[in-house]
Length: 248
Image 1 (spheres, rainbow, N blue to C red):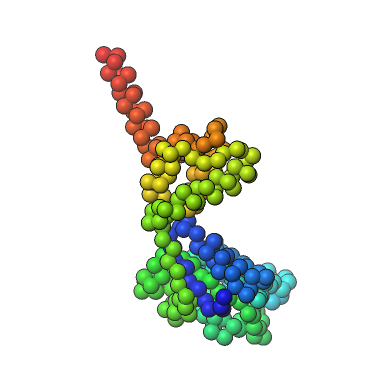
Image 2: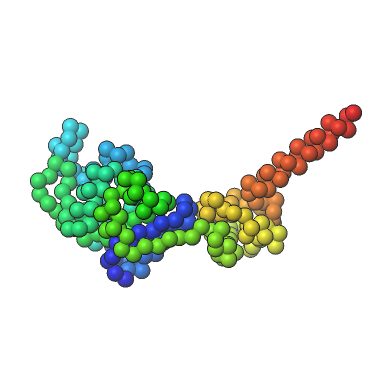
């Protein structure tokens, strides 16, 4: 419950936005906006415009004034995901905002102020990104006040049964299915799988299994895991070879 900037690092799918939302809604800003921004999804030439807005006539096609995300989030929190994708010039303007809480929309001569907390995230090692010149060192230090490293799912397998129960309840309700859990064999596979896509991959696996299942428990046949598909292909190939051999 403070206003310090936060940096969240972790592999794709580990739940960085969930973590950021939890921080926001546990803080004194909970009643104010929470705006998630995927920096990698914004064209580089439009980043400043999206964050800080523009005045009418700031450029040829700017026929009206546009409010930036910083102003929209005033009093709340902006979550900047994939912060390493911000162009260097936008990093400079963001750094000034972090230092002074001041910014200028494109085409404006007037400085504005906004009270916004910044939570940033990346699936890269940002210290390495700084060393490679992709992220400004001074920006990294400004963001890295409170830092979290979210471990991949394969390093916290004890969470998998709890997450499975949550996703089963969620998607059973969504798809009007009466599914209460998993078979022991299915849970064994879920716990031992390496989950390169982390929690997001687990969620999608359970969602698909709920759709495909016809019984009260998710079984091995309902799971679409790469290891199962590989074994199935191998068995099919072996069966095919056996048939070819049988012809002779």
